[in-house]
Image 1 (cartoon, chains in turn orange, brown):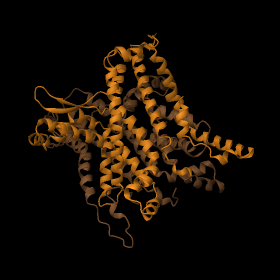
Image 2: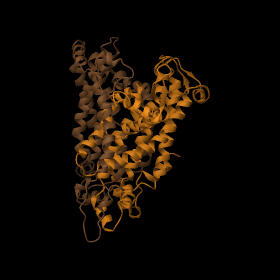
Image 3: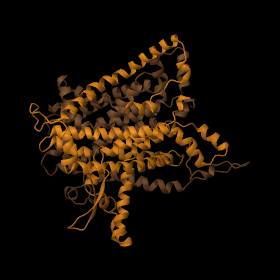
Image 4: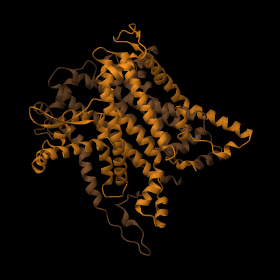
Length: 328
Length: 297
């Protein structure tokens, strides 16, 4: 069930001539495969020790009730944790739905935006090197929690208000309703920009791998810029599109993008806040309050299954659309 | 070398018989500059936070730019770090050591795993690819406790091994490398094979030089993850001397002292500087054109 879609796109199928070779070549093939496994081995060892095994433990944990840190106090409850997540817990399901919604909205936006920026940044222009560096700045800072702070303290009023006072200017100019919406859009745009650094980088590297000769040949044959983009650029960077979709889906799913406009009742100030992510909720369940480890494991598995299905759908959808240049 | 951008590049078309002089498309700057301003905002905010006196730090909502800059936060940081039980340089060393080993070995393992998946037809590659996707999809937070049990059963708690080894098999690295390696022409590898090169030699001499941008990319991302995360240290470290820099800073910030708000901001800015340097160093590698290898897919 899992293997079918991946098999069709990610693995290289043997080309027909290789298959029709004689037995002698088959043994060579086996030899190659064995050498190949030696390359994979270190990763597999790490995977089994630090992912597969803990994963199985957490799956077992998800069918049990375990509330204290005391590991001995385990009670088997079957599917109760899963039932609770969907039917009893008032908070988990709305957070999950919101997050899935945000992922579907933001992934295309980030992808299109980062491709656009990468293409601009790949132009030969004066000072373009500086721009390339600047677009990546949010990623360098991102993990230093500054962006998080920008959010928690109200990105809208802060970023576009603050000293520059764009907010009050907009409010005078457009009226409060429109101004708030414009600020909301600006806030969302800056979110997309701040989340696009890695994707821009991957696209830039991908675009660099497209040989200039293709474009020359295309231009000599009279192709327009539009045609060059769709007929040359897009197919040749399709593996990086797949890569970026996967990265973006995981990234947007782990980092919340749900920006809520909040109007402070006492001061009347308009700010934007970041919603809670599924991961934050899982962490809160596991490591604070009652330390409900069993329930947190079940939530983790729900999260994982949804994410895995989404990624598999992406790969299945892209399977005939990804073009591997090296295969010819 | 420039990639065709529809709309902006129309002038480049060769009209019959005459070649037009290409104008500098100024319009691009009208798009680039506002986006650059937006991208630089977090850095501006971060810098001014570090320079803010306490009363400005407590202001809500905060100002984007500091009004009365002061170096007091850095002074307080210096005082706080010189009074810790273990010299602060020890934390910096711990972080640097863990990060360097993790980046080098992690990138090597990731590239090695990707090569057969992209270029050698190994049976079971589909299964391994599915496992990689599963590994990317699984939230690491949920694995914290089972992982701790594994690490403690290997007697690695409170050692560098605990901080380095579990992070080595990062599956995203493998996925990135597979995508990039798949773009290397198979003919190039077959030619080397004809000349009697072993798989290991092909990997080092042909595959690796051809994916330098990808290596620089995953090396930088691994660096970011290792340098900035306090998670593993929080779980696996017991003794003072084994703490990493992010954990030490988090500990400083947890003290109930009003000066710590500023200290954390100052420390955060200082912690960002190595990331910036590494990024600038790896950037030229990342953006290196593959077309220069002389082989065009």
